[in-house]
Length: 312
Image (cartoon, rainbow, N blue to C red; front, side, top):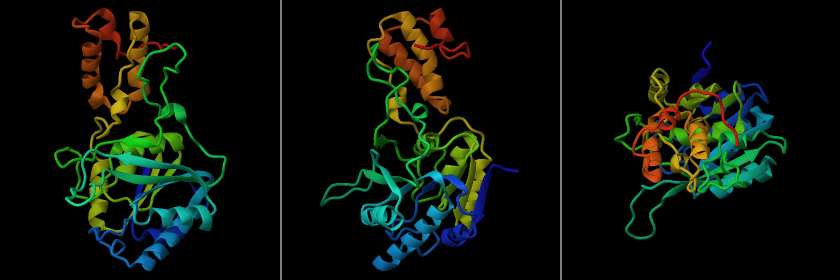
């Protein structure tokens, strides 16, 4: 049986037929009610209709989420406060983080400031929930003996580029999310073999990431065209996720001791770039540039080979 399951249908109707307390993690990117063309009418509702829609799907999401589970909800600024209220007050969930996804390009405006971020609400069903910090750390800026060189907490402001139209993984979907964005949420809030639900699957990003991270993914999508897009993505060979937090390629400064530096760099790929083979060459170039190692020494050649683990 495939670990990735795509359901064609309405999110509320399909979730209502699912077993309660059955998913470890829910990642939801619902329509923002901005009038975009998704092949359904849920993005052009009046104010009260949209609030009713939000209450219904969030109630079903709460029901199917396990007691130790987490939900991440993408939402635009017009309705995010109302979604927060539903999660916090109506459903009595536990607020954890208000994440800002910052991107470098967005809608241009001549009167007012151009939007350059989306918001993501992170709520848990209880105070006993999964959070794998070691799986989502980012490299330190500087090497210090007192620092945890395994990396730092990434914080609640995340920078991932949009999946631009020149990107080979760009799909025919108006709001396709970067794979690296989903990777962080899935790694942080679930474990290998856990069950993940995306009630608004779109182009299939969540399931594509689940496929590579050994999770069971279920996606619900109302538009048959997007279902076909998602199915095709799951059949493509994997060469690395289509986006990465720029900090993942950061090399700590002041690694002057070559033995310590080589040990750290050997682990960098495993710690920070294990799903980003397509970024390794750029990282190697940065290492060479930063430490002026213009010739490939024995240690430089061995940095990315699978050898015994090093620990500090």
